[in-house]
Image 1 (cartoon, protein in one colour):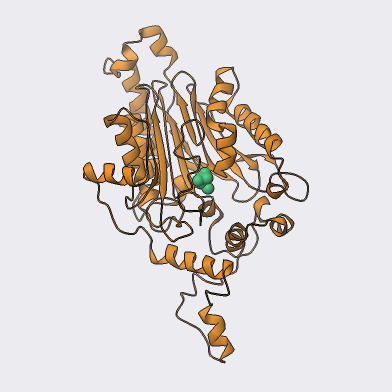
Image 2 (cartoon, rainbow, N blue to C red):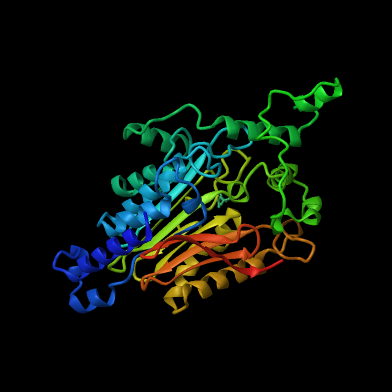
Length: 406
Ligand code: ASP
């Protein structure tokens, strides 16, 4: 959508707020409160929300923003948005084609929260469904529960008519998984190219675009070689090496989309959806489906969600804390920085620290408040260093504010 179309649709939305056709929930609050809450809609997400379109005309934040200004339910607009990277086979951190667990099985996590309705729902470790965010929404809408996991989540989805597939791997995600296995278990998983080279032959059947491709520049704190040397868990080191070697985009190893929005009446919703940490122990659940960790929404305050090392958010209940900091009056950026400081202070295990004693991983937060103020913050202000924003001025990437820089 071009900028002038955004301006036109956003202006129409503002007009709708000022007209008698304003949403009932807003009108019911009385004119004074209703006017106070009239804000300019904005959608924020991590970069997956702007860099992937699944071959279509819109990214997640553009689709979500369009839905909002056209009067779609706020959470539905966000979920339609994140369905784009969920379905995009090129996005290896979310939904279909997400990087699998250590056994090669794609297990997905998602949750959503509907601010004005006080609904929430999530699925954890679900297999076979390309769009876990939709199943999470169904948990919120159709059940008394907030979280359904594993086989139960898959069968719940099947019962509702979702297509359940045997395998959500793409050739790319499967090949990357095989490469990871070769790196962690080279005694059993042989590299066919090395073997052919040993015989004086060239090539091999592995797609050269997937294997052995170098990458120039970039890198982030978690790729610090000193920190990696000290880590005992070879699987993690191999995964980070694959990021460093350019096989996996950094945002896919830590791949997730969190997408939050404030609508024209100041209502707030959010959704998070992910394939979780690449090569995770089967059954591992991260922060993404856990309310308060990977996402939290309070319609009187705002919304916050995360990507990055989920265990840090589970330990610190980060998203809920950010919302609480905003409730106490903090700007979204300050609230995000406050929880990043807490994560930093709570990261005391040497295995999680770099050579300077700082966290060797990254965590990022995407935050909006009911006034339409927003922020994107990260533990490390390096690496990809951007987040996605869409408002009346169109979709764009803005710099992530880093607590630490290298
Ligand atoms: N936060 C998610 C998790 O830990 C995925 C990620 O962003 O890496 O599962």
